[in-house]
Image (cartoon, rainbow, N blue to C red; front, side, top):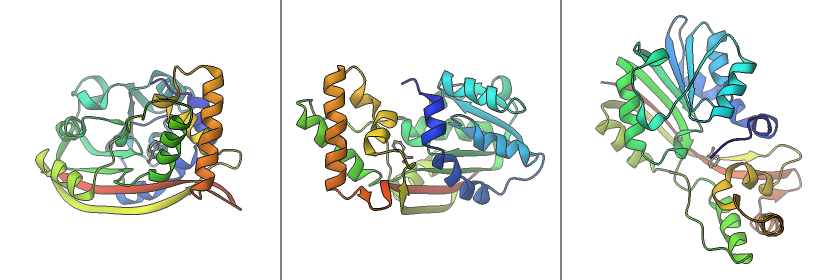
Length: 253
Ligand code: BEZ
């Protein structure tokens, strides 16, 4: 799936803003080598550079990496697939830490990602991540799948992986990590002032929307907002997404 990197930055900047807490958990030290996995448009990676870290951002989307390089010329960005990480090029020296914010749930083969991350870390290196946890966007996804049914489309398959805390801890241990912290919590997230659940679906629900003719797409998006409103995803303050986060800190053993 190719991303619209500019719209992502304009309407979904909260993704990076919420990442501040993750950088707090990471506690980066000057001179450390840190990989930002699934870096998107690269803001978090550049923040690490500003903190004196030797930061490298990796993303599988060419438009995201291109924008990251344009916006943050002082930081290294690599186009690459997180499910098949190997120590090559800018990834060839061991890392002191890997951070990942709101990216892991896009990766179908979680075990392959965790094994790859482990292979890039020195012993004792930290892996600090936040992803959607079980129950994430349940109301939003129900609005989208319900709307798909309303316009006569087959029921879509959930395109993300939202693990339980136990599932992810088990996978981390199997990949060679000692798990230090796992948190699973709801984080109702206000959308940008001009955004609705349909805007969210246009950015993130592409597996459902791509390939539809203009009329069906428009009808579907109207039904998404109608259903989202019925589900309470619109309040007097605006529209929100029902995010549930899974956060962990693990150490390469
Ligand atoms: C998330 O950050 O939880 C998320 C974002 C887009 C699609 C699905 C989940």
